Length: 323
Image 1: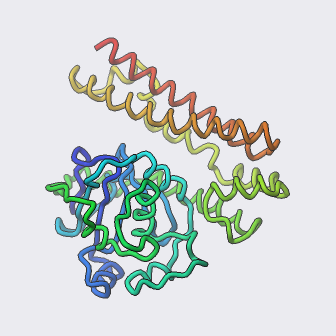
Image 2: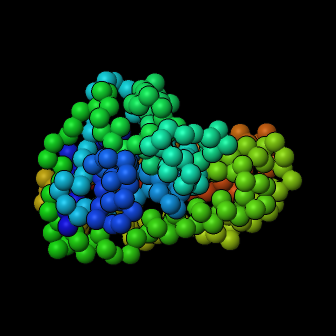
Image 3: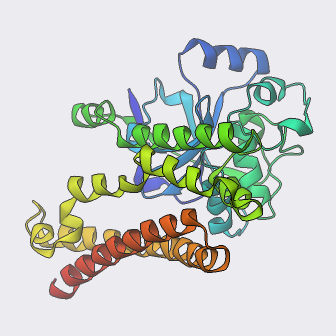
């Protein structure tokens, strides 16, 4: 089995893949394509894509590839605001998968009734379209191969390598992101039953409650039951060294490696801070303006996440100041 080399990837890269699974082979055969799936890399080993479980994130270290020719990485040629591309994709997390649109992408049949749902290549094309880059002629009905062949991208060479035994072990181990996806899907499915099928993303829940707060208490309880509010605890328990200078200093790394790791962690912490602070400010406004229990709940969550990110940042800075 093979993996993609994270050191060669940049935020906004598009990963095009296929596999030996029956569905992937069938898609490639019907569409006369080399690839059956499109994925957006968002940095820090994470990607966002749309599959049958909807739009969710994944870890590149768990993305096993059957053969070297079954994966390709392309990068945008022109300058583009990659943050806008990634923000679009993040806002789509939880959105339902559109089997109909995915099946009709080859024939270019598109229904406006299905416009809010996603499938893999639509998600990637729409994300770039939001930043002013039209990768394909029709983002609503496009194929992964069309993105691979787009005049706006170029190939990033030699990104696929053979996975080691240790990497294989990690790739097949317990995946907390899968649990996160299950929780997200539970929330959105519950919200759809309560409010209506027009709820496709977390942003839709917020918009619906602003328009009509009738289900404010019920939505708040759904979040409480789901486990969503405590997902951050897994990271703190799994990587305590990120938040404790002594633990960080005692990692089995050389001085040079420790410094490099600290730089990486500082950049990661700053990116999280930017994201969390934006959400914190949004929910502060919503709770003050609309007096929603839901907004109060989300504000408390992002306050905790900001505090965690600051601990992460300060720990990395302490290591850099010492080294």
